[in-house]
Amino acid sequence: MTRELARRGWCVNHKRVLRIMREESLLCQIKKRFVIVTTNSRHGFPVYPNVLAGAILSAPDQAWVADFTYIRLRSAFVFLACILDAYSRRCIGWHLSREMNTQMTLRALQQAIRERHPQPGFIHHSDRGVQYASHDYIEQLEAIGAQISMSAVGNPYDNAKAESFFKTLKQEEVYLKEYTSFADAEQNLTTFIEKVYNEKRLHSSLGYLPPAEFEAASILIAGS
Image (cartoon, rainbow, N blue to C red; front, side):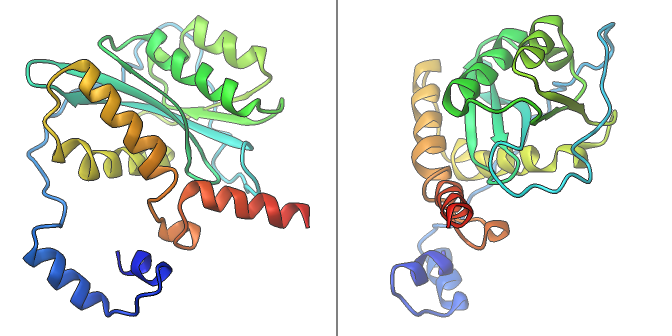
């Protein structure tokens, strides 16, 4: 928040910002978490080595990271699959589903492909869950010439950028809302991802720029 105020021309100490936000109850209120196991890596599909580890990224669409999480409605759980650009942390594809299946992750991937048109050879990284290892999902990756990369079993740090995204999503959107229906959740999540996270939310790892602005700046530099 202090960085955002500075971007708008305000010079204010971070301690004062924290005090005012605390007094006005503007800090994120973390709700009790429910734990659902989402990764099923006990399947008969092939798995792939981690080729993202150690990769040096210098531009968008050199590597994507994929993951999904669960979101609680009043009387049910739904599942949100997302694709992030590993360089800019921009969410470039997502799909909300009532079912935790391959179609959910595949639709998020297909949205990302339509939006970005990646060049053959880019890295697609995920966990080893059946939703990403299934024939239909791998077939789509092979069709666009992706290098398929998967995390080691039980190592969430291999996909830390996706984990960080979901933490932000839940703390700054999901835990602050009471979604009344699937459609309500879908509308609010779309607005948060497109208008808040991608275009406004500052990231310290991006030099305190939002993902869309960071991408635009990197493209401008590359073209100069």
